[in-house]
Length: 244
Image 1: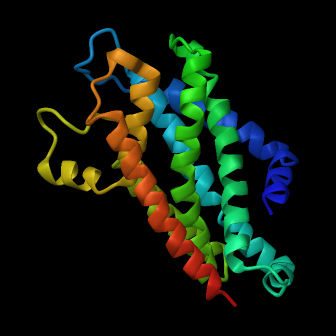
Image 2: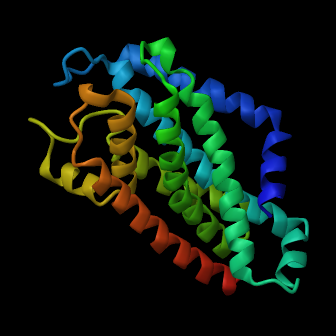
């Protein structure tokens, strides 16, 4: 299942190209058109949102991967897998890890854009980000697979995915700081309940280093993201076991 999902992604050249162009447009157009006063000296807005755009790419890609469940069901492949003498837990984990690998590849594509924004990338930073990005995708992919397991139409999945994606993205701090003067209390509370907030904060901690003052220590962010992954994988596994 993992190999199948990865091969499907690598053969879809349109998706690979779009994974490069869309974040680039966000960084150039949105990052240039919007200027926020940041408390971090020596850090411009494009550099600030760069880790957030990596998080956005991981989020949107991970959620979109859930549509593969509907396609497999439409063409009968899912039926063949579900009646095979393997556990549905294995089916779910295979699809989840495969889709997470696809999302990770797209995150890496965005990562290499860093030098265009004046961010110094290094081998150590890359290998620190790899497990973090993969950890972030586990829970997000599980959301997409769980939603898809309860739906039967592509249109319905697109609606639900947008309903989930946009609040997670805009409340994660990807585009604007979540603390400081002028930030409403309700917005700060909502962001604290958003698991992607901790993923984006962890990405900024690694990418921006000392130029960024994290919301909380890196180990706490990783622990919260990991806990969210476990919860969503359990929910996703239960959803797959009940799927017809």
